[in-house]
Length: 399
Image 1 (cartoon, rainbow, N blue to C red):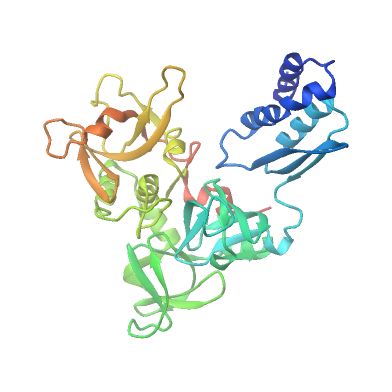
Image 2: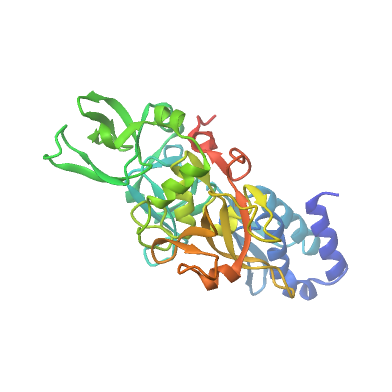
C-alpha cells in the first residue's frame, strides 16, 4: 500500500468515513499536519505551509505553499474523501510566477545572509558564499531559494544575481578561481594600493578571466571585474585535485580557525556557529556537509561510543544533546570535531579546544555529559549528506 493510501485509510478509520462534514472539519488541521510529517519531516529541506481557510456559508479552502507536489496530491485526495466540497488552492513551488529569467541564481557578495522569513527582522537561517548557486522557489519582496545543501531560506535580491537556465549553465561551466585565504580583498586593478572591489573569504568562487603577473583577473556573477592575488587563491579545479581529507588535515584546518567569533547562522571564516564551523572545516577539504548539527548527525559513518572514547579518531564529528528517553525524542544542540587525546575543538562563543577528561584544565563538564553521538566523514564522501562540492546537483549543468 502506498504512503498516500496509508494516510487516507488511517485517517478515515479514526474520523469515520460516514461522519458528517461538521464532525470532520474540526480535525482537519491535524490531518494537514499528519501529511506534513509524512512528506516534509524537515522544514529546512522543503516547504509545507498549508492551512485551512473557513468562510461563512462557503466550502473550506486549502491555501498555502509546498515544494513537494506529492504532499499536495496526498492531502487533496484525503480531503476530498472527507469533504468533496473542499477547494484546493495550494501552490506547488517553484511558483509559476517565477519567470524563466529568475529560475536560478548565484551569490554575488562574499557572505550573504539568508533568513527564515522574508525580512531583515527574521531569524538568521544560514549564510552562503560568493559564487554559490541557488534554485529560486518563490518571490515575495525577498526571494525564497534552495541552496546546494538542500537548505531552504529567504534572501534579499541585493545579494545574489538571478539567471535563466542558459546563463546559469554558462556560469557553472566557466573556469573558476577559489579564494583560499581566510580573509582578503579583490582589487580594481592589479595593484593592492588601488581601489577594492569587495572583501573575500575562504571558499568564494569567481569566474577566471585571465592571468596578470601576481594576479588572476576575475569576474563576479553580476559581471564586475576584479584582480585577486595568486598567493591568496587558486584555480578551483587545481585546488580540488590537491586537497586530501585526512585526520591530520581536518585537525590542522580546524585549529587554523581558533579564535573566530560566534554568530548564529554564520558559515564563513568571518564568523560562524557550531555547525557552520564544521561545515567550513569540511569545505576546506572540498566536502559539503548539511547545514545544521542535527542534520549533520544523520550523515557520515556512525562511530560506536557506547563503551567509551577509544573508537574515536581525530577528525570525527561529535554531537551533543539529549538522548531519546521517557517519550522524548533525541535533540542535537551542538557539534564539534575530535582532535585526539580526549580533546575536541568547537565553536562556543569563539572557536577553542575543550576536553572530555575531568582531570584536564580544559574539561567541559556540560558538553562531556551531553556527548551522545559521533560520526566519521572520512570514508563517507559522496554518501547522503556528504558530497564533494562540485558533485552537488546545483553545481552541475541543469537539463
